[in-house]
Length: 107
Ligand code: FES
Image (cartoon, rainbow, N blue to C red; front, side, top):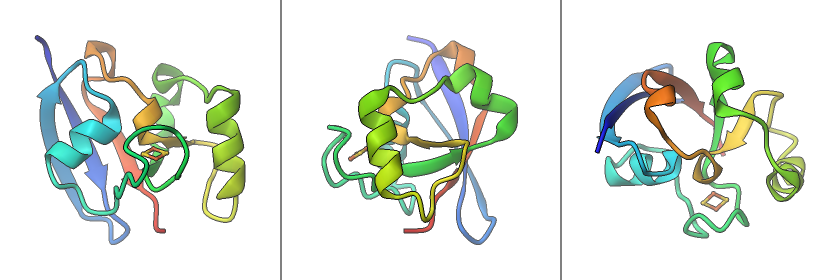
């Protein structure tokens, strides 16, 4: 299995670089490495928005766009979401996302 490296930036600007197998979701990678700010209360069912991240603009083309269900969840947290926001549980990692950089949203 290919490994993927992701940089998580916390609300204070502190960067944390973690590496994991490329078949995880971004949320699963964060949880497996104890990244702060990713509560993931619903376990990845796209129904809590506690895995909200802001994707670095340089990576939004590769992370893609939310589907209708994710978009509805993002709309519910529109006070903190931006155009580059995604739910980490809905981003499936791959070698294409090796080097991804995201900011963990303040909740
Ligand atoms: S873990 Fe609940 S929406 Fe992502």
